Amino acid sequence: MRAGEGVAFEDGPDRGRVLVFGRDTGGAYSLMAFVVAPRPPLPADETPDFGPHRHNTIEETFLVRRGRLRFLLGEEIFDLAEGDFVRAPPGVRHGFANVSGEAVELLVSFHPGGFEELFILHRSDQDPPPTTTGFIDDARRLFASEFEA
Image (cartoon, rainbow, N blue to C red; front, side):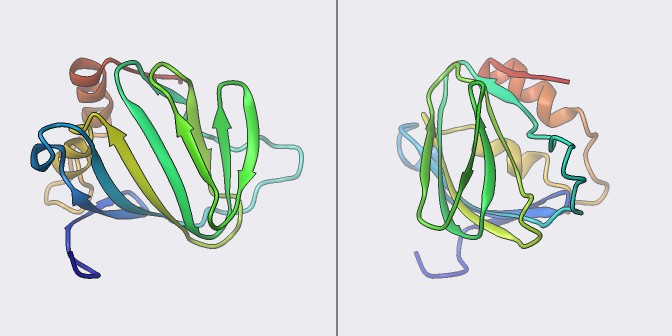
């Protein structure tokens, strides 16, 4: 695969490309390049919204290619920098927040593959855009995922 190839999508202010679909690996895994857009700075005493969730049947991995990302894994919060890697095993609560003020580039994988299809189905750059709950509803129904309010 050449640079810039893959199936591009937007997810609100974030964007990505599916590089490898689970359907192309016999369901073994999928791989996405994902760019987390910068967010407005938070007051020092405010906790960022990590979008905490868990996938009960999927392992998810994150490799930071560029930038810094604040990460939630279980109850632990830590910062990831360029080259850092984290694995969220099935059933483990996780999420992230870009508090760096700059875009963060990631490689994200799902094991087994298939979850990446939701990013294409519910991409925000289609007309009309999908409902805001469609992604979460499908993730719960198809992939035993749980999302915290």
